[in-house]
Length: 246
View 1 (cartoon, rainbow, N blue to C red):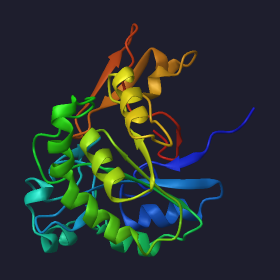
View 2: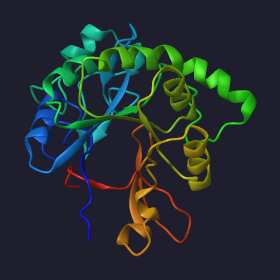
View 3: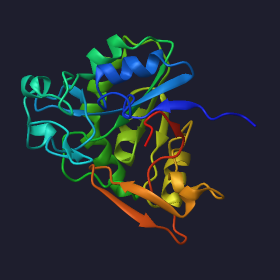
View 4: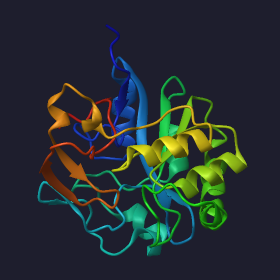
């Protein structure tokens, strides 16, 4: 039986502060790590930064993610870079800084989290008349992300819960892409076919015959978490073996 590919979620969130350079470097040095997964969204100036939540004042197991507050997209880059992640010496990195620190022998899964807007239409397979509007919403940020990725010669995979992000990516470049499926498998499959995606990231508890198929911890794309026991419908985070030791 083939072993699953090891993807370090949020850099290596179970060992080092999530989405930081320390997490990425630690994961890259671990034998067997094939790829790092990171989340990107813009600072107030539009510069792509590596951070998961929409807001700076979220928590992880009761610990504040940063000492800051407010929306990432409304916060100056200088402020973001000065904040401590999970009470450590690690700060919120720019995408370009993190890519410079990672060896090109390890691939990067860049999750396009937010283009700097509130209305994201997460997990939807969009009707034809909405796709162009969503693509245009994402286009400026996706182009900034691609500019930062030009110097990285390792494998790149771009993913998103938002069809508009994948539409903007496909228009601008020929990188591998994958829809992240939240709670509608058919919508995810439609998006994958529409953009000829190289991969799809299904809900982890959609894997029949595993404990995850009946119960899982749900973390919404905005960072909120809840636990549910399932009887049927597939929901949850993306599947795969991850290095976050939950």
